[in-house]
Image 1 (tube, helix red, strand yellow):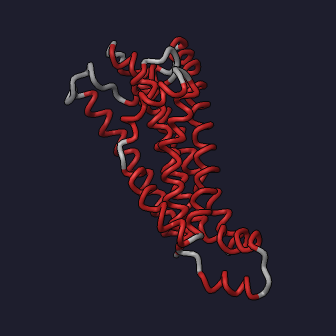
Image 2: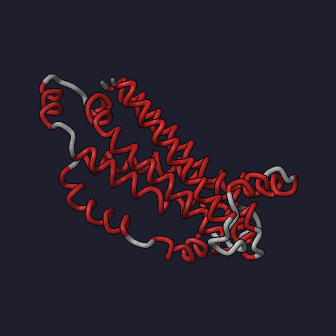
Length: 254
């Protein structure tokens, strides 16, 4: 019964994706939207067979993926560490939780010019700004997970002489895995969008954001939608990868 239910869910998801692409193609073919502003998935994929388009995407994708990867790695490691430290202490959580929630909800993209002034014009600015936008989802969700740790388990471990390191690694850290991974997935999406928008906003000489901005200005819609589609597929793949890692960690925790 369970396998049938899982199969039904998978087939429903596949059908939804196919319907989305079919609707997208029909909108483009029947010119429901001006053809200057939209290209169907068939035309987008076909543009990838052009050598010049593939070369431009590869040339611009590597710097952007490097910036996203660095910003996400720093956000994840630092965010879990900070969220775990603050979330496990009631006093620290009382002081810092409102501050982090306020920053998390604020429009941080407005502060991009300050990062250019502080760190200069280039990849470093995008990485630091990506960290600034991506670290708070991890902190907030990790704090929420640490706040829900079973105190009885912690007190029992202390009464049996467990050291703080063992309490963190054996009780607290396993308990925050679901919440922390929610924060990590949100962080990845936030960092990716932030870095791409920063590249578009500043008009950098290289990067997927700049390529999207350039092709938008000259109405070259097939490769424009192709690069957006590829960018989305990479993020979906990374998200699925994190879900698989979370599932494996939860298996060992149980």
